[in-house]
Image (cartoon, rainbow, N blue to C red):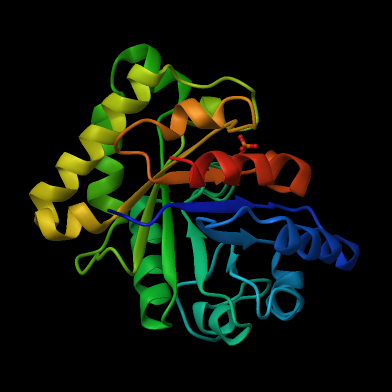
Length: 249
Ligand code: PEP
């Protein structure tokens, strides 16, 4: 049995006042909570790890550089993320692939840097609406998996998040059949490349418009081990019911 995991991506939202949300989340967690990772903006990483100290909530960053240090204005390294007490880092989110032109090779290099710093990489993949309409979803997923996951992937150092781009922040979600198809395909592709021991251990998250009213049915899908959640992770009022649905599966 793979431990369930819910990761919250705060994106560019949150100031010091938002740390209060972490306190409420910590006190509102369901009994037997899944693994919970909150990824605030980098300005809050140190304070977020302090604020959640002693609670089961873990903290992650939303990106990191491939290098440990150097002349990279505006970037943060995986070493710096780990220095903050964070344990995870989201890599290859479609917003970064789109806005910053991040390629699969960039994502793989960042994942290697994250592992070297002792972080778990949450690697995002997912097709666009055009890919889905063209019937190339599984080709795109195969290509992203092959290019974004370095050799040496394990169930401890990596979590894979399947996030159809057209479902992120739109309120649209794929049908359960579409989620089953892609998650089964990801698991089989990982097994071919890394062997079944590794692929059986790797957690696969679904991401894209997960809300309290659709979480339970998504979490019933066999190869869905949790979710990457954007908007609904910003307040415990939305996030806690999702955690409850996950811990009930
Ligand atoms: C995300 O940005 O990773 C995401 C899944 O966002 P939302 O839940 O808001 O669709």
